[in-house]
Length: 402
Ligand code: COA
Image (cartoon, rainbow, N blue to C red):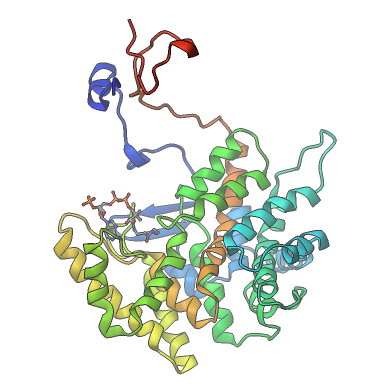
């Protein structure tokens, strides 16, 4: 339709276009490193294989925001600050109580996080201050928002956070009103640790792009939340659960995979832009899912997930022999969170409750040494042409230029 072909554009301009920015380095970070070929993820040099079984989410928050693992005293101080900041402004609770109970949890979370800006202090210039305390504020409040919405949509009153519980235990307590067992608390804690950061993933990049305009931390995190929503990114966590439900029992897994591929669908929770091996976070979540399911005395979700992974590996290997597609972090998120009793449409929200640590650390890193992020596009539309007055337009015609 009168446009340049992309190839022509590239050959005449010498431009390189990487669709999806695959392999393009757009900035630097000291926060985390993804080594996709060997399946290693590190936060500030610490391997998640060491962090997942040993460190609490609060320690990871400290590591990401302050640059080092906390001393016992620093950890206590951070816990106190998180507890002090976990409550929500009453008007935001009232706002949640006034929206339809059918509202999608990610829409609610994004809206309420954005609304937090309305209640945050401003400096003499009328701007919100994007600093480490603003970051802790957001980290503290995200789980409160999710737990509150979870109760409100069930017709229950929200429960105030407690100051004597860990961040993970507090989330479960605010959701159910019961202090969780150690197994449940550990499951949420390790889940949050594993999700805390992942270099320049789409939502983090979105946060950094927004920050690079000198927008504040609330705007940047709201942008990140919007980006996390889609099922090629964090939305895959909820979509993986939908698959478990659709499969129903382990022996249906292979047929499900074949049917999905025949319909041109992707298997949610499988594949990754960076990893060419199984996502290093998947083995931890696999182990947690197994432990939780045995604790509950109902191993159905875990058994379906195991069989789905086996079937996906087999069928995808046949269908896409050139592409290494293995389980990613969202795959075993589904049985873990299902066994914790969370509704499937809240899974992406809990992902956000972990990733907020990384988002906010990336926002501060971006602001510390900022340059506007503004890439180029290869123009492949029509060449320049004259403006056509409205009475001379025939409709649909594309100006072709002189
Ligand atoms: N199921 C089926 N096929 C898949 C697949 C999946 N989960 N993941 C990738 N593929 C296939 C694609 O169809 C494509 O095949 P084609 O070349 O024949 O068209 C090929 O592998 C490459 O996919 P592409 O979309 O170019 O790779 P990407 O690097 O952009 O994709 C993901 C990465 C994560 C978007 C992709 O693996 C995916 O869609 N996974 C499912 C969603 C998901 O779990 N997202 C969470 C990621 S943490």
